[in-house]
Length: 116
Length: 114
Image (cartoon, rainbow over all chains, first blue to last red; front, top):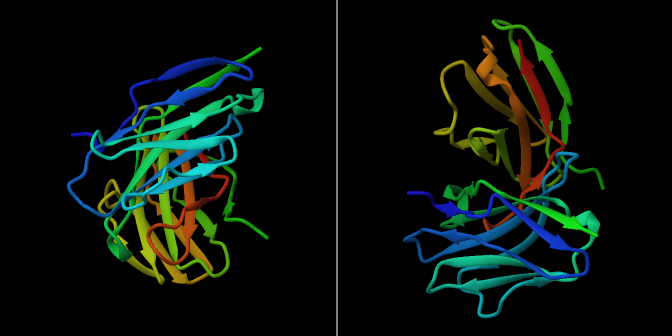
């Protein structure tokens, strides 16, 4: 079974609109972390936002927020007021466990295109 | 502050040749990760180190791949002999402290094996 599932291979959004990128995860570990990364066409991986499994509130970082629904095992990324520069691939990732034994597993990504 | 540094940025080689990719993590970071990204398989973790010690190399595809971290500021990923299916972008990432800290990625090395 896939540990991280991103069901939207591609998404379009109009500039200044909000967009939600879906991510569901599968783990039996009570302690885990969820990450979103952005990969623009230049290729680098840019960290956006993090949500811990025990965090009570949804994470927010500027225009990025994470809609964390633990019971549904979903961690959707919400980008508000989209900008042309938001056009990129977006990857959801999960880290299970703690300490030195933990590692990141990435989803297949969603390509977001922001249009005028 | 300097981020994760990878070299070379691009590498083109012929099948059968040895390839060595290099990574300098962010100073002070104690975990280092090597990933491979392809269209077919996405982003895969190959191996990661903590305090210079390999923790999990289960993602290393086969014996042709090897990785070392002789000190806290340098790591190599070697492919010998290289094959066309090794063509990919190889990322190095580093992080510090608890497992809940984000990983900072290098710019990647685009490897093409002819």
